[in-house]
Amino acid sequence: MLHFLLFSIFGAIAVAGAINLLMQRHPINSALSLIAVMASLAVEYLLLGAEFVAAVQVIVYAGAIMVLFVFVIMLLNAGEEERTDGSRVAALFGIPAMLVGAVLVAWTLLKHSGTGEVALGALPGAPTTIGWLLFHDYLLPFEVTSILVLIAIMGAVVLAARPEATAQRPRKEGA
Image (cartoon, rainbow, N blue to C red; front, side, top):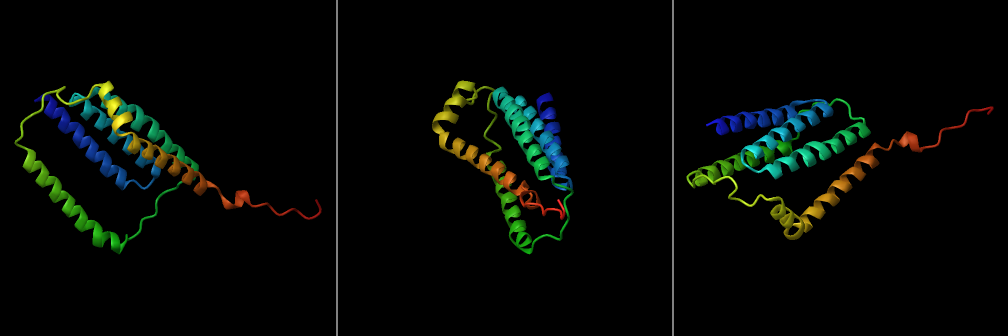
């Protein structure tokens, strides 16, 4: 009962942090909300008995990736977000896609809800097993993801380069 209560509390914290992430106008506040979501997900993993995944969640995502996000936000000198009315295309396709996704999630949960509980430690979660899967079976997706992160960082650096800083300044007369 205590595990279910803690799981529900930290699940609610994750959902509240995700909503706060979307509602914030300043990118730094959004990044801090994302850290709260990732930390609560790490606690969820701990409650499920996946200690290694929880540690990786904190070290890699809440630590390293968020440092990169904050670095890029500071590099771009992103200010407060301007609110717009939105896109008609997003409303036209986004709302039906969201409804279809919600129906699929509900159907999956209802279909698999009577399968019983899985004992802690029954699933592969040892660091050697995860390392073998990550660096053997899923090596290509892992490397593609790292290359995409590198491209995103390079794109942020290119976007952050100010045109007036690269152009030569006119010389003063008489100098």
